[in-house]
Amino acid sequence: MVSKSENSPSIELNKKLVLFDGVCNLCNGAIQFMIKHDKEDTFLYAALQSDIGKKLIAERNIDTEKVDSILLIEPGVAYYDKSDAALQIGKQLRGYRTISSILYLIPSGLRNIVYDFIARNRYNWYGKREACMIPTAELKAKFLD
Image (tube, rainbow, N blue to C red):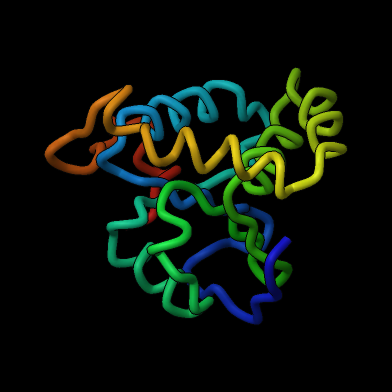
């Protein structure tokens, strides 16, 4: 957990927002995976590059030179970055709660070494899109503009 947040006017209070790198193929695949496994409809999504993504990043004074792949924002509570974000997300997905809880026992410094290595190499390994993902009509409600 990184910091408290007072207001996020565009996000329903019972939802959590995942900000992701909209041009990263690995990140887009992770979002598709999350949508499929989010049986309780917990998450909303927005690209880091979107207007809402930029606004939420600026409101929280997040340095995108240090965090540029995934953020989890819980309105009125906190935001999480790097491996903490990934594990907090996993704790909300049925079938992944236990493994996420176990991985949380590993110190964040060690988890983030692995996370940063993957984040640095994600474009080389998985490729990059020219533009952010455009959700289908049925998924559009899960994405903030």
